[in-house]
Length: 204
Image 1 (cartoon, rainbow, N blue to C red):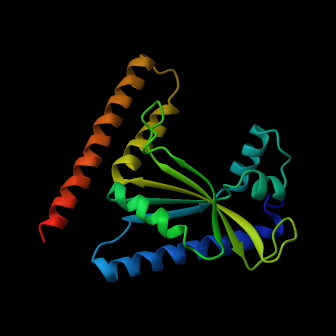
Image 2 (cartoon, helix red, strand yellow):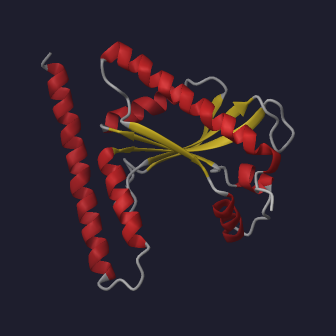
Protein backbone atom coordinates (compact mmCIF):
# COMPACT_ATOMS: atom_id res chain seq x y z
CA UNK A 1 0.00 0.00 0.00
CA UNK A 2 1.30 3.45 -0.92
CA UNK A 3 1.96 5.84 1.96
CA UNK A 4 -0.92 8.17 2.72
CA UNK A 5 1.32 11.11 1.78
CA UNK A 6 1.75 9.79 -1.75
CA UNK A 7 3.84 12.00 -4.02
CA UNK A 8 4.06 14.68 -1.30
CA UNK A 9 6.30 12.67 1.06
CA UNK A 10 9.46 14.25 -0.38
CA UNK A 11 7.91 17.71 -0.05
CA UNK A 12 7.11 17.40 3.66
CA UNK A 13 10.56 15.94 4.33
CA UNK A 14 12.03 19.04 2.68
CA UNK A 15 9.83 21.36 4.75
CA UNK A 16 10.84 19.56 7.94
CA UNK A 17 14.56 19.90 7.11
CA UNK A 18 14.11 23.55 6.17
CA UNK A 19 12.42 24.40 9.45
CA UNK A 20 15.10 22.65 11.50
CA UNK A 21 17.81 24.49 9.56
CA UNK A 22 16.13 27.81 10.37
CA UNK A 23 15.91 26.91 14.05
CA UNK A 24 19.58 25.93 14.20
CA UNK A 25 20.57 29.20 12.51
CA UNK A 26 18.39 31.13 14.97
CA UNK A 27 20.06 29.47 17.94
CA UNK A 28 23.58 30.00 16.58
CA UNK A 29 22.86 33.68 15.99
CA UNK A 30 21.45 34.11 19.49
CA UNK A 31 24.44 32.32 21.02
CA UNK A 32 26.85 34.55 19.10
CA UNK A 33 25.10 37.60 20.56
CA UNK A 34 24.49 36.44 24.14
CA UNK A 35 26.63 33.40 24.88
CA UNK A 36 23.44 31.48 25.68
CA UNK A 37 21.41 28.94 23.71
CA UNK A 38 17.70 29.49 23.10
CA UNK A 39 16.87 25.81 23.43
CA UNK A 40 18.39 22.68 24.92
CA UNK A 41 17.34 20.28 22.19
CA UNK A 42 14.96 19.99 19.29
CA UNK A 43 13.37 16.90 17.75
CA UNK A 44 11.18 16.37 14.72
CA UNK A 45 9.18 13.58 13.18
CA UNK A 46 6.87 12.93 10.28
CA UNK A 47 3.84 11.03 11.52
CA UNK A 48 3.99 7.43 10.35
CA UNK A 49 1.61 6.18 7.70
CA UNK A 50 -0.11 3.89 10.20
CA UNK A 51 -0.52 6.63 12.78
CA UNK A 52 -1.86 9.13 10.25
CA UNK A 53 -4.34 6.63 8.81
CA UNK A 54 -5.59 5.85 12.31
CA UNK A 55 -6.03 9.54 13.05
CA UNK A 56 -8.03 9.96 9.85
CA UNK A 57 -10.27 7.08 10.93
CA UNK A 58 -10.73 8.60 14.38
CA UNK A 59 -11.79 11.89 12.81
CA UNK A 60 -14.01 10.22 10.21
CA UNK A 61 -11.83 11.58 7.41
CA UNK A 62 -10.95 9.75 4.19
CA UNK A 63 -7.45 8.27 4.21
CA UNK A 64 -6.05 10.68 1.63
CA UNK A 65 -3.10 13.04 1.28
CA UNK A 66 -5.51 15.97 1.51
CA UNK A 67 -6.80 14.78 4.89
CA UNK A 68 -3.27 14.18 6.16
CA UNK A 69 -1.70 17.39 4.91
CA UNK A 70 -4.53 19.94 5.00
CA UNK A 71 -7.30 18.80 7.32
CA UNK A 72 -5.07 17.55 10.16
CA UNK A 73 -2.00 19.79 9.82
CA UNK A 74 0.27 17.71 12.08
CA UNK A 75 2.07 15.43 9.62
CA UNK A 76 5.25 17.30 10.58
CA UNK A 77 5.75 17.58 14.32
CA UNK A 78 8.54 19.48 16.07
CA UNK A 79 9.29 19.63 19.79
CA UNK A 80 11.55 22.35 21.17
CA UNK A 81 12.75 21.95 24.74
CA UNK A 82 14.12 25.01 26.52
CA UNK A 83 15.77 25.65 29.87
CA UNK A 84 13.66 28.66 30.81
CA UNK A 85 10.11 29.88 30.24
CA UNK A 86 11.24 33.21 28.78
CA UNK A 87 13.19 31.36 26.08
CA UNK A 88 9.96 29.81 24.83
CA UNK A 89 8.39 33.22 24.27
CA UNK A 90 11.59 34.56 22.71
CA UNK A 91 11.60 31.71 20.20
CA UNK A 92 7.94 32.28 19.34
CA UNK A 93 8.57 35.97 18.60
CA UNK A 94 11.51 35.04 16.38
CA UNK A 95 9.43 32.44 14.52
CA UNK A 96 6.90 35.20 13.82
CA UNK A 97 9.63 36.95 11.83
CA UNK A 98 10.44 33.97 9.59
CA UNK A 99 9.92 34.63 5.90
CA UNK A 100 7.34 32.48 4.12
CA UNK A 101 6.00 31.32 7.48
CA UNK A 102 2.76 32.24 9.21
CA UNK A 103 1.37 31.20 12.59
CA UNK A 104 -2.20 30.13 11.92
CA UNK A 105 -2.99 28.69 15.34
CA UNK A 106 -1.46 28.99 18.80
CA UNK A 107 -2.42 27.73 22.22
CA UNK A 108 -0.65 28.86 25.35
CA UNK A 109 -0.96 26.08 27.91
CA UNK A 110 1.76 27.71 30.02
CA UNK A 111 -0.22 30.76 31.07
CA UNK A 112 -3.47 28.82 30.69
CA UNK A 113 -2.60 25.42 32.10
CA UNK A 114 -4.81 22.45 31.29
CA UNK A 115 -6.89 21.11 34.21
CA UNK A 116 -4.62 18.06 34.60
CA UNK A 117 -1.53 20.28 34.98
CA UNK A 118 -0.22 19.96 31.42
CA UNK A 119 1.85 22.95 30.30
CA UNK A 120 3.25 23.63 26.85
CA UNK A 121 2.97 26.15 24.00
CA UNK A 122 1.51 24.83 20.75
CA UNK A 123 1.82 26.40 17.30
CA UNK A 124 0.56 25.44 13.88
CA UNK A 125 2.73 27.04 11.20
CA UNK A 126 1.91 27.45 7.54
CA UNK A 127 5.18 27.15 5.64
CA UNK A 128 5.75 27.94 2.00
CA UNK A 129 7.73 25.22 0.22
CA UNK A 130 9.32 24.98 -3.22
CA UNK A 131 7.25 21.90 -4.05
CA UNK A 132 3.65 21.90 -5.23
CA UNK A 133 1.17 21.08 -2.49
CA UNK A 134 -1.85 18.77 -2.48
CA UNK A 135 -4.07 21.64 -3.67
CA UNK A 136 -1.83 22.32 -6.67
CA UNK A 137 -0.27 25.54 -5.32
CA UNK A 138 3.37 26.17 -6.19
CA UNK A 139 5.08 27.24 -4.07
CA UNK A 140 3.07 24.97 -1.84
CA UNK A 141 1.62 25.52 1.60
CA UNK A 142 2.62 22.95 4.20
CA UNK A 143 1.92 22.76 7.92
CA UNK A 144 4.16 22.18 10.92
CA UNK A 145 2.94 21.49 14.44
CA UNK A 146 5.35 22.89 17.04
CA UNK A 147 5.38 22.22 20.78
CA UNK A 148 7.61 24.32 23.03
CA UNK A 149 8.32 23.26 26.61
CA UNK A 150 10.85 23.68 29.37
CA UNK A 151 12.83 20.64 30.46
CA UNK A 152 10.55 20.38 33.49
CA UNK A 153 7.36 20.54 31.42
CA UNK A 154 8.69 17.96 29.00
CA UNK A 155 9.65 15.52 31.77
CA UNK A 156 6.23 15.79 33.42
CA UNK A 157 4.40 15.37 30.10
CA UNK A 158 6.45 12.28 29.19
CA UNK A 159 5.72 10.61 32.53
CA UNK A 160 2.04 11.58 32.48
CA UNK A 161 1.69 10.19 28.96
CA UNK A 162 3.35 6.93 29.97
CA UNK A 163 1.07 6.43 32.96
CA UNK A 164 -2.09 7.57 31.18
CA UNK A 165 -2.06 4.52 28.94
CA UNK A 166 -1.75 2.00 31.76
CA UNK A 167 -4.87 -0.14 31.99
CA UNK A 168 -6.89 -1.02 35.04
CA UNK A 169 -5.33 1.65 37.26
CA UNK A 170 -6.59 1.60 40.82
CA UNK A 171 -7.14 4.86 42.70
CA UNK A 172 -7.40 6.79 39.42
CA UNK A 173 -8.66 10.00 41.02
CA UNK A 174 -5.93 10.03 43.66
CA UNK A 175 -3.24 9.50 41.00
CA UNK A 176 -4.64 12.32 38.87
CA UNK A 177 -4.66 14.62 41.90
CA UNK A 178 -1.04 13.73 42.67
CA UNK A 179 -0.01 14.37 39.06
CA UNK A 180 -1.68 17.78 39.21
CA UNK A 181 0.07 18.56 42.50
CA UNK A 182 3.42 17.60 40.99
CA UNK A 183 2.71 19.76 37.95
CA UNK A 184 1.99 22.75 40.18
CA UNK A 185 5.19 22.22 42.16
CA UNK A 186 7.23 21.90 38.98
CA UNK A 187 5.63 25.08 37.59
CA UNK A 188 6.81 26.88 40.72
CA UNK A 189 10.29 25.44 40.13
CA UNK A 190 10.31 26.77 36.56
CA UNK A 191 9.46 30.26 37.82
CA UNK A 192 12.14 30.08 40.51
CA UNK A 193 14.79 29.06 37.98
CA UNK A 194 13.72 31.95 35.73
CA UNK A 195 14.09 34.35 38.68
CA UNK A 196 17.53 32.98 39.56
CA UNK A 197 18.70 33.48 35.97
CA UNK A 198 17.53 37.09 36.03
CA UNK A 199 19.37 37.69 39.32
CA UNK A 200 22.54 36.26 37.82
CA UNK A 201 22.18 38.36 34.66
CA UNK A 202 21.58 41.53 36.66
CA UNK A 203 24.62 40.90 38.85
CA UNK A 204 27.03 41.12 35.89
